[in-house]
Image (cartoon, rainbow, N blue to C red):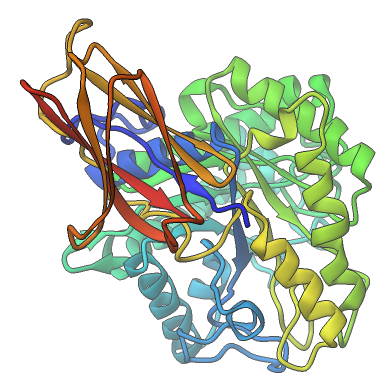
Length: 461
């Protein structure tokens, strides 16, 4: 059996993988989240997520208050590693339902999971977020001034979101870092901020997105910003609608019922653009929407389409994403993941997807808000001894540099119990995960020479 190994290095609280590029005043945990997402993007794994995974279930036509229940957990014994939420549900639903979603977010954060928000914002004086029936030129007016008081209305709506971020999404006095995905799928024709609504141009859209990001980042410090078009995409669409590097931390893409070839084509466009602009890439919405009830076809979408599309991409681009998120399980929606009443076929297919060494659910990734601290607070010089741990199928490979040999290499569990120890004069030593019966969790690799001892944390997932 192949185990997943995930590790990253930071020097104390010096964050070395990247930086939150939009908000210069981003909180420490927000920057840590950004760095950890960068690390995941550059690994051979991705996080699996679902919208409202612990406040909706397929058997229910409404939200529920059991924040520890999820269809995913009922089937696989694991929660998604990313929770999607929507400010529409935090603003426009009953106080009771709003509390369900707020508590669900807090619980997920306390488990160390990633939180991402979209916003199906209803148009002014309507209860609909679609283009049909929205006030004429609403998005254009907001982007370019304040005709009819439209910008005043929009900023007042943003104030409500900021109030939720600063006052509701708080645990132990700390604001929960979120990845906010406003004004999504702008190249489609369904939202009032979309391409086909009221003569709204790409230039107008950029102004609207920039206004939104600037307004929010001036009033809070716990937000990463995600920009996500809908498929199909090409380089022209990306360039025409991209708001600019100063306004985006994460580049997302939404695409449903996608074939393997198109998945790779569109993901290649996204990843190329993200890497050119030094951004995180993510598949921000996907799933199979044409299945109801037992969800056999929807479940097979994960194991038969998404996973092969990512893992077997000859270009390797589809692997360069931080997470994959699917939509809500509810009676009025679809079973995007299997549920308690699904068939055994659906459950097994989704479990196979979950068990892939390239897919991370809860409990498989480290707390996304805690840096992994290595040995000292000072960066090593070029000639200092160094330890590199490499995951290679069912093995832990320890590479040694600048050590005076022989050295003693030890493997310890989180309690400090020694599982293995070998003396070597070589520059590399390998341990078998299977032989040491190492279960998922935290382990310590300790290397001791006559003059130095270095330890490194390793997560087996």
